[in-house]
Image (cartoon, rainbow, N blue to C red; front, top):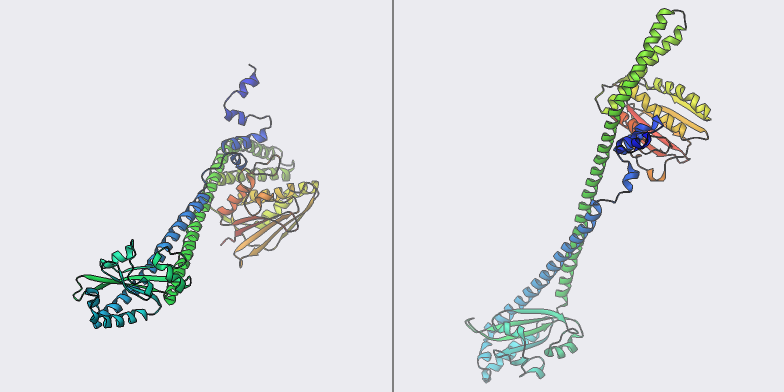
Length: 489
């Protein structure tokens, strides 16, 4: 086995780290440790909370609402029909007591019972909405009927009549076109296919100890059925509205909870990524600080041994070495999430320096860099991290225009003098379609050798000072990045 074979046979950790291009080792290692959205997209989707909750809650709420509406509708209809039948029973009972009609049921053969009986029947036949009435003896035989052809007949299998003869008020409703009872044949011709109410009312003896007969009345109470239909419609309307309200509220709560969980998961992933960056960058920073210390010591030694040899150049070396050392220190603190005390920073000066640094690169790429800064108050922050944030934004804008174009950087005071806004606009390729209206995910980059961490660090730096950053496409093409920082007190 060769040396290269042994090297490639090591752990995946080392395979991800090994590369002939040193500049890509850190990015490959981080992508292996923390897979980005492209790698996660290849995995099967897990439990989708909102989708399953939407389907199951919709089914449960609909079943619950429909069941409640059906039960309430039936209860309302039955209660109203029974109350109407009880009123009719009380009315007939008062007639029986007033005219002593029970003597006919006890001995219907007596001629003296016919007079009160005829009066009683006339009252029954004139009840509101009555289309037919039958009077039954205790054995189920029809003693009198508004339909003379039914007198003397007996219909077996009439459960309603049997319950009425046991002392209960029985009420039912239906349609004459749907009935199957033989006694409803004549009623169908009279009712003309309408809804009818059938009530069996027991007739008690004088002491209300024994049922001596029953009265069956068929009515077409249009007003009663309209009231029932109105109540049923009200119940179903309330059930539908309450179901929609409950479903909407539950769905909104779960959707908001899912958004909160996704946002927290994204923050955790970013925190893990930045922690990994901070851990690895600590070793990088240590390696950078040693050469910086040697460069600074050499510049100081040259200034002492050769006082007249380019003092301005040696001074620039010392200043830049100190600035880079402070920049690396502050950047590492932000990458690790360590607290950094903010201070007043001249943002206009930082923008001017950034313009000078990126000016040669912009010229080589034929990018026309325009910088506009008015008289701005100091902002709250630290020079090192803010310099890195501005450099990331300007460098990304220049790289987004490989064929040249206009790059406009402007700063102004907004929010009633409480915030300073920096707007970076380029005429490049713009944001990809999947990023319209959202922040680029971790490790996402449109550049061939990009790490996908520049914008993430920039946002973390800006938000740590209480600022905001927003990325949006320009209507005329390109991208607009708006950065806001609070004014230093």
